[in-house]
Image 1 (cartoon, rainbow, N blue to C red):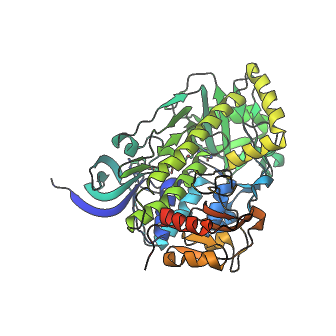
Image 2 (image 1 turned 180 degrees about the horizontal axis):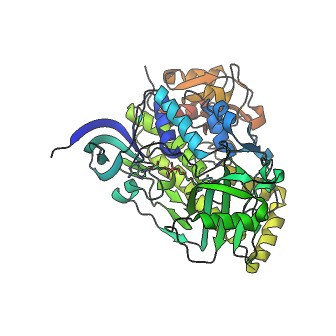
Image 3 (image 1 turned 45 degrees about the horizontal axis):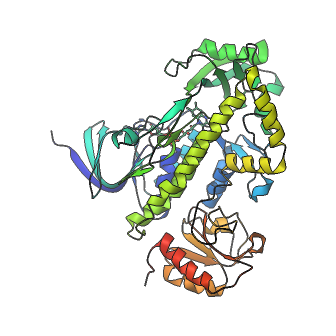
Length: 504
Ligand SMILES: Cc1cc2nc3c(=O)[nH]c(=O)nc-3n(C[C@H](O)[C@H](O)[C@H](O)COP(=O)(O)OP(=O)(O)OC[C@H]3O[C@@H](n4cnc5c(N)ncnc54)[C@H](O)[C@@H]3O)c2cc1C
């Protein structure tokens, strides 16, 4: 039987937070991706629950934060590393949003999907990728649908299909990794009765930290309220055989709650439960030819510090605008390769820090000395700042040629007031932004279709001009101690490198 064939510019496989963010970034740039997901309906339950400060900033940069805040369960002003009793503080990072949000992942997915629908992009559900090949000109994806198999001929396939990614497997990406002896469970429950203090919303990270159970192998976390009146139960286990495929039983969930709270908390129903895997793997390449992997398809690790969803969204932010430029025919040759060079090192770093957290959260006594050492280290201002920057995503700094010593080059640009509006406000259309005085502004005129120009006081950042990419990272800076004419030349080079050849 012959298959129907559709020709599309970009096929996004997977409508989790990573896939929907890539598609949203493309849509903002005027590129309508085709998004497929094997699930017949959107997720009703939420795996991840936390949005880190950089994700909150990104949502603000795309005008989505107000909608998120309506349903956010709590705004937590500090973070933690491995649940150690030293709050991580975000002050050093000059963020307009120095807090993380408790906000269910499925609500973020719903929000992004409705934004996409508004822009004419619909998620094709019950569409499962089952085959993938590529050649010099593009890729062909075979997708199983309720009406039979369909072939998508496309320039780019974006694998956002999660931890057991078919794109990764069929695309030939290596995925080396290791395991620890950690396993865990998350479950959403309806409560019949519970004391008032158990039901209060968390206000700081200390309200969310775990507590060892009797045999020193288990760590039980406090109940977390969800927006729909449900509560999230979480516990972690160490040292036993990891049984990722074994379904979670209602009895296990009830026993975990009794061990933490005694009989005072009465569960009426366990609505959903899932096991956490102990695997830590990272793809060897984020791009192979016309195929890319994003989010959990590229990296998996234990959910220590709530980073998985957030790193996936940041991957998507990094790739989306570059891909749009490629589809629109204005990407410089090497632009798409920078997705791998910029993001793989971040994935590697997350694997490393979650591995360290797996040791530090292990309740066995032999880790006590390590815990005490880290408590001392995190009490030091500079160490605390660094860990807060790493966990929150606020410290990400890409290697970008230019003024290597300058602290803002490659870093995210914090929000600031401009002559018209704010920096985040001016990035809402996912275009570039040059903040500089008139002399530099004129240099950018041939890129007016891709780069906006604004004025603002950058003295706090030791600069008189910055060029900001659509993902909010600085790709050119004019330091305020030096007004050499070479900066204008370097600005021209940066515009060509990141935004392509000048327009007419
Ligand atoms: C129990 C649990 C708790 C977690 N808690 C947290 C947390 O608190 N904080 C945090 O940051 N992270 C957490 N994580 C991790 C976080 O949920 C993931 O990092 C995040 O979901 C990754 O997003 P993604 O879009 O890459 O992949 P996913 O969310 O897995 O989305 C992948 C999508 O691809 C679809 N798909 C899969 N295969 C195919 C195919 N062949 N064809 C078409 N579609 C396909 C799937 O149906 C799915 O919709 C948790 C994970 C688990 C399992």
